Image (cartoon, rainbow, N blue to C red; front, top):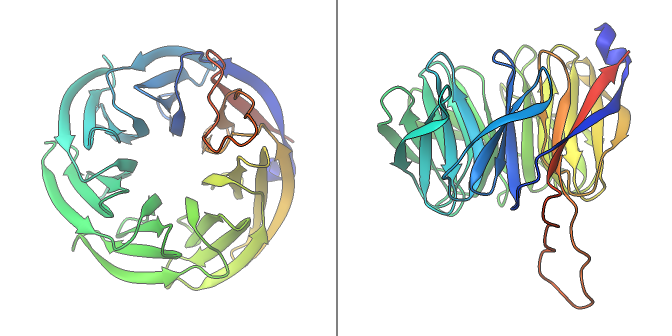
Amino acid sequence: MALAKGHYQFLREIPVGSDGGWDCLTVDAAAHRLYVTHATEVVVIDTTTDMVVGEIGGLAGAHDFAIAEKTGRGFASNGRENTVSVVDLGSRKTLARIATGQNPDILLYEPTRAEIYAFNGKSQSATVIDAGTGVVAATIPLGGKPEFAQADGARVFVNLEDKNEVAVIDVPARAVTQRWPIAPGAEATGMGIDREHHRLFLGCDNARMVVLDSRDGHVVATLPVGKGIDGAAFDAGTQLAFTSNGADGTVTVVHEDTPDKFTVVQTLTTERSARTMAVDLSSHKIYLPSAVFEAKQPGDTKRPKIVPGTFKVLVYELKG
């Protein structure tokens, strides 16, 4: 627990530079790789040097990337194409494209059955894919718009943003068996999990972190966090939970003192627009994508454009 007594500090930024928006990023701690979705590609970063070492191209609105353990394969969601790309991690070549529901967004690898869950925003469903064969094993209706998800070995938990609840999927049955309200939280996006202590950490749009008991769904705690959350994470090695707050340009860092007591220990300044994040469970570094945006003109209600060539990944390390 000594690491948890420190604070996060800025380490460096990794310039990426190519144009287009971004969404989620995924750390493969064992292989020392970080995968960052970026428009029509996934950027590959070596986490030992924090340098770009390649990309996975030919994607169509990349939202997320999942690693299927021990298969040598990764999976990328193509939101504009309603497919998931199967990628050879060694060559970074696409092996196949698998049809999903509408607008596949977040992906989750469920290791007990070696399956990929693709959560489809527009069709409010999950497409379950056998990671070895690429065959679609099931389509699970969710009854709400899915956001981030986690798994505990028997169940998959997914935030339904528009329903203010967590849907619980029974893995063997491939069906939603429970729905847990998250009040006083609302419109949860990011989700972290402490599997040992049965805790879910939800990053909510009303600037709260809600901690749920993953056994029965009751609310254990709520904490004040920043605004504009899209990502959340938990690091079992430090007992720290995080929300990335893009509207504020901060990360809220919460320590799990006990499974029933939580303390905000840091508000880390990052950059506005750094709304998603990933934590390296080996090095304990955290990574957040960001970019510079053009100034909005008076009366303009459209999302501001990214200044070409400014996309980057911010890196922060824990100092004791």
